[in-house]
Image (cartoon, rainbow, N blue to C red; front, side, top):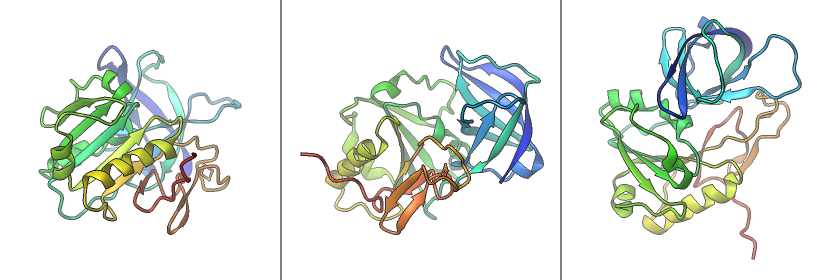
Length: 249
Ligand code: FES
């Protein structure tokens, strides 16, 4: 992984909350896949702030499509410094008919990069937007993607059927307490299914990444296979293998 320059080529508003940037990248970054991200510094000059983590939602030849909040101003021609790719791509089962994506009190952006590939492979997709995620507008997503809205208590219409149909599940949660929220999702699936098998239910962790290079260990998550670094082994971890803290009584 190395730092490379990138240039914002186009900026387009997609709704009242979000915009998409076409980001021209160096060929060395072209192998980036859905699930991996980039750490971005907006200015050439040194600054004390951490880099921003950006999640590609589209992939082109030496180009990434990035979704960002509309209130941040970007200009075509703006140059950036990019560190990446961060982490590993999402892993999919070989036989996949239906994928369930869950966004729990947070936008689903980090998972959207997998949608074009899944649709190209004839995989159907349901996106469940829970709680604050219901504010995320979805008109720009492909019409084949089913959108379901639910509440912060993890209730949504047709929940038993949605869970039963899913061959694989990916989730993102509000980063205020990822372990607690992923634990709730894991418990829900354990309740609704006879068993939560391995390689079935994944959480895409998004902790702050101070170094992004496996050096500081700030992004460590305990699992049954030992500690994992989200910037190197993540972002997605098999929730059946994560060691969650004991619930407080
Ligand atoms: S961010 Fe430093 S080790 Fe992961």
